[in-house]
Length: 163
Image (cartoon, rainbow, N blue to C red; front, side, top):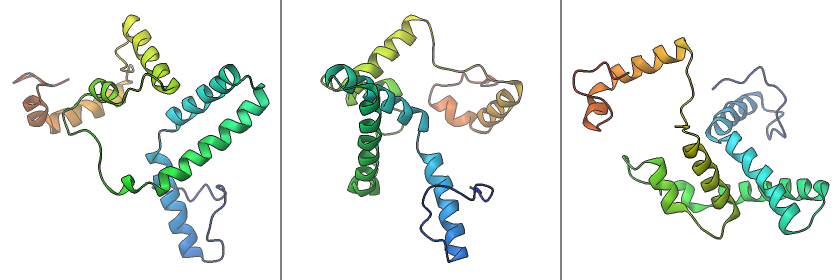
């Protein structure tokens, strides 16, 4: 990932060694792409609401504290030994199955995620975005390339165009 145009990202470690600085910028781009920023933002927003409602905090304090708690959680993830091994569900397990296993009825974030999922289902939202013609073409090319695997997984009918 090339982010040379973004010269100023927060706190680069290597400012006097150009080659290390460039490597750090490149890695930062990949790390940033590996993080679901929308999900992280959603968690932070929900944390603000939990702090305001359950802990009777004012908005400004809740926002400041949520930022600190999210930063601390990200630091913990970096030090978590589990990041060196795969603990994910095996291939073939659906997102719905993964969510059911990970659900904690005492966690306000799990509860909010489940409520959002139930609202989406009730609204008939299958959580698939409408694609533009270009994206649809790329997806169809990918499906054609992987047609045999998709068919074996039951995600394409034999002899279909898998779209």
